[in-house]
Length: 145
Image: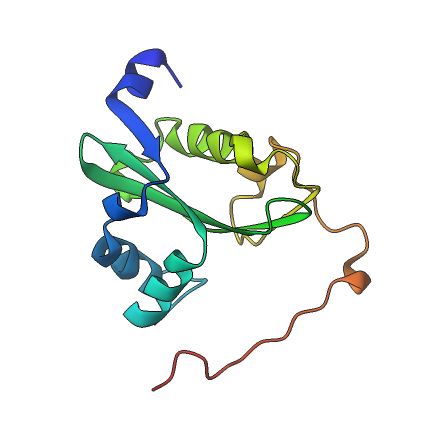
């Protein structure tokens, strides 16, 4: 990403700056959080290390990390709004998160993606080498009233 763009955008972990409504609208139409209720988005933000990407005071991207700051971290809900894609912002955003000082002791990072494998591979993410060691428990009714 060129320096001019970097000066036009900034990243913050200040949760008071987050546009919760925009985040909710994006997530509820995403393939990974379809129909997620606003209350769940708010709870997830309250219990995560959150990163907002901004142009001036307008939020244009979001990501959060679920972590103990020592042994493991789960990178979640990473997105850049459509009009801002293709400028290198996603690469800069992910690199910033992975280089965040408080996360440098984390030994194991995880994430899920359907279509951004190339982006994450450039930062050292790989397919699971022993998928039989990772298990998942899904609650199919979590977002129902």
